[in-house]
Amino acid sequence: MTGSDEMSRREEIISFIKKEYSVSPEYLFEGDFDTAVFRHNDTKKWFGIIMKVKCSTLGIDGEGTVDVMNVKCDPLLVDILVQREDFMRAYHMNKRLWVSILIDKVTDFEEICSLIDGSFQLTDKKPKRKK
Figure 1 (cartoon, rainbow, N blue to C red):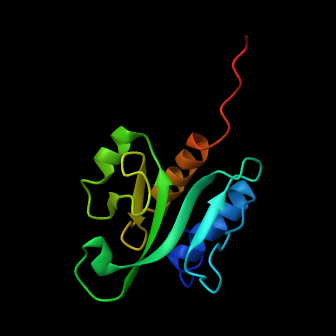
Figure 2 (figure 1 turned 60 degrees about the vertical axis):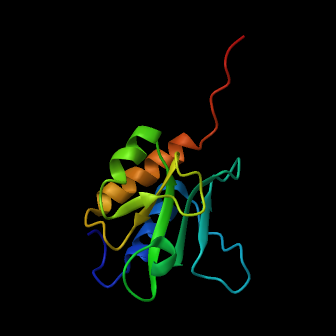
Protein backbone atom coordinates (compact mmCIF):
# COMPACT_ATOMS: atom_id res chain seq x y z
CA MET A 1 0.00 0.00 0.00
CA THR A 2 1.27 3.44 -0.84
CA GLY A 3 0.82 6.51 1.26
CA SER A 4 -0.31 6.61 4.85
CA ASP A 5 -1.68 3.46 6.46
CA GLU A 6 -4.40 5.70 7.91
CA MET A 7 -5.62 6.72 4.45
CA SER A 8 -8.52 4.61 3.14
CA ARG A 9 -8.18 2.86 -0.21
CA ARG A 10 -10.84 5.25 -1.57
CA GLU A 11 -8.78 8.26 -0.43
CA GLU A 12 -5.63 6.71 -1.92
CA ILE A 13 -7.35 6.33 -5.28
CA ILE A 14 -8.68 9.90 -5.25
CA SER A 15 -5.24 11.20 -4.30
CA PHE A 16 -3.59 9.16 -7.09
CA ILE A 17 -6.04 10.46 -9.71
CA LYS A 18 -5.60 14.08 -8.58
CA LYS A 19 -1.82 13.79 -8.70
CA GLU A 20 -1.53 11.75 -11.90
CA TYR A 21 -4.25 13.35 -14.07
CA SER A 22 -5.09 16.65 -12.32
CA VAL A 23 -8.69 15.45 -12.02
CA SER A 24 -10.83 15.95 -8.91
CA PRO A 25 -13.80 13.76 -8.05
CA GLU A 26 -17.14 15.03 -9.25
CA TYR A 27 -20.16 14.32 -7.07
CA LEU A 28 -23.18 14.24 -9.37
CA PHE A 29 -25.93 13.55 -6.89
CA GLU A 30 -26.87 16.16 -4.31
CA GLY A 31 -25.92 15.03 -0.83
CA ASP A 32 -24.22 11.83 -2.11
CA PHE A 33 -20.51 11.98 -1.32
CA ASP A 34 -20.08 8.22 -1.73
CA THR A 35 -20.38 8.31 -5.53
CA ALA A 36 -17.60 10.15 -7.34
CA VAL A 37 -17.06 10.33 -11.09
CA PHE A 38 -13.68 10.99 -12.72
CA ARG A 39 -13.71 12.68 -16.13
CA HIS A 40 -11.17 13.85 -18.64
CA ASN A 41 -10.75 17.60 -18.25
CA ASP A 42 -11.09 18.30 -21.98
CA THR A 43 -13.73 15.86 -23.31
CA LYS A 44 -15.56 15.27 -20.01
CA LYS A 45 -15.63 11.53 -20.81
CA TRP A 46 -15.72 9.31 -17.75
CA PHE A 47 -12.69 7.13 -17.08
CA GLY A 48 -13.78 5.98 -13.64
CA ILE A 49 -16.44 6.03 -10.98
CA ILE A 50 -16.11 5.07 -7.35
CA MET A 51 -19.18 4.28 -5.27
CA LYS A 52 -20.59 2.40 -2.32
CA VAL A 53 -22.86 -0.46 -3.34
CA LYS A 54 -24.94 -2.75 -1.12
CA CYS A 55 -23.38 -6.20 -0.81
CA SER A 56 -26.76 -7.77 -1.57
CA THR A 57 -27.01 -5.79 -4.84
CA LEU A 58 -23.72 -7.29 -6.00
CA GLY A 59 -24.55 -10.79 -4.79
CA ILE A 60 -21.85 -10.63 -2.11
CA ASP A 61 -22.44 -12.32 1.22
CA GLY A 62 -22.70 -9.98 4.15
CA GLU A 63 -24.50 -6.88 5.30
CA GLY A 64 -23.71 -3.29 4.49
CA THR A 65 -21.87 -1.84 1.53
CA VAL A 66 -18.56 -2.21 -0.30
CA ASP A 67 -16.48 0.37 -2.14
CA VAL A 68 -16.39 -0.36 -5.86
CA MET A 69 -14.52 1.39 -8.65
CA ASN A 70 -15.53 0.94 -12.28
CA VAL A 71 -12.88 1.34 -14.97
CA LYS A 72 -12.91 0.67 -18.69
CA CYS A 73 -10.79 -2.26 -19.90
CA ASP A 74 -10.11 -4.32 -22.97
CA PRO A 75 -12.85 -6.99 -23.14
CA LEU A 76 -10.26 -9.79 -22.91
CA LEU A 77 -8.85 -8.26 -19.72
CA VAL A 78 -12.37 -7.99 -18.27
CA ASP A 79 -12.86 -11.72 -18.94
CA ILE A 80 -9.61 -12.53 -17.12
CA LEU A 81 -10.15 -10.20 -14.16
CA VAL A 82 -13.67 -11.41 -13.36
CA GLN A 83 -12.25 -14.87 -12.65
CA ARG A 84 -10.89 -13.37 -9.42
CA GLU A 85 -12.98 -12.67 -6.32
CA ASP A 86 -11.85 -9.02 -6.13
CA PHE A 87 -13.32 -8.11 -9.55
CA MET A 88 -16.72 -8.44 -11.16
CA ARG A 89 -18.47 -7.36 -14.32
CA ALA A 90 -19.23 -3.67 -14.02
CA TYR A 91 -22.10 -2.53 -11.90
CA HIS A 92 -24.23 -0.03 -13.88
CA MET A 93 -21.87 0.06 -16.89
CA ASN A 94 -21.26 -1.94 -20.07
CA LYS A 95 -20.30 -5.33 -18.63
CA ARG A 96 -18.17 -6.23 -21.65
CA LEU A 97 -16.00 -3.10 -21.53
CA TRP A 98 -16.02 -2.08 -17.86
CA VAL A 99 -15.00 -3.93 -14.71
CA SER A 100 -15.90 -3.29 -11.07
CA ILE A 101 -12.93 -3.43 -8.70
CA LEU A 102 -13.74 -4.33 -5.10
CA ILE A 103 -11.10 -1.84 -4.00
CA ASP A 104 -10.72 -3.02 -0.42
CA LYS A 105 -10.11 -6.61 -1.55
CA VAL A 106 -7.35 -5.87 -4.08
CA THR A 107 -4.10 -6.03 -2.13
CA ASP A 108 -1.87 -4.55 -4.84
CA PHE A 109 -2.55 -0.81 -5.04
CA GLU A 110 -0.27 -0.56 -8.10
CA GLU A 111 -2.62 -2.94 -9.93
CA ILE A 112 -5.52 -0.56 -9.27
CA CYS A 113 -3.40 2.38 -10.50
CA SER A 114 -2.51 0.46 -13.66
CA LEU A 115 -6.18 -0.29 -14.36
CA ILE A 116 -7.09 3.38 -13.81
CA ASP A 117 -4.32 4.39 -16.22
CA GLY A 118 -5.58 1.92 -18.81
CA SER A 119 -9.10 3.30 -18.46
CA PHE A 120 -7.80 6.85 -18.79
CA GLN A 121 -6.03 5.89 -22.04
CA LEU A 122 -9.00 3.95 -23.45
CA THR A 123 -11.40 6.85 -22.85
CA ASP A 124 -9.05 9.58 -24.07
CA LYS A 125 -9.54 11.39 -27.35
CA LYS A 126 -8.70 9.29 -30.34
CA PRO A 127 -5.99 10.80 -32.55
CA LYS A 128 -7.41 12.27 -35.75
CA ARG A 129 -6.59 10.26 -38.83
CA LYS A 130 -4.70 11.97 -41.60
CA LYS A 131 -6.59 12.25 -44.88
